[in-house]
Figure (cartoon, rainbow, N blue to C red):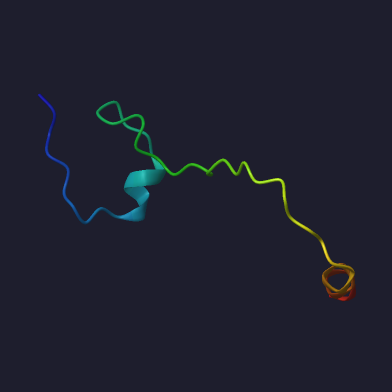
Length: 49
C-alpha cells in the first residue's frame, strides 16, 4: 500500500527521491528548438557585466 501524499508538498519533497514515487522529482525540461538567434547587442551586454 502507498501512503497518500498531501496536495501541498514542500519543495524538499520533489528534490529527494523516494521509493514510493521515484519518478516524482525536479528535472530539467528538454528543449528541442534550434531556431534561436544571439544578437550582437545581447553578447555585448553580457560581456560588459
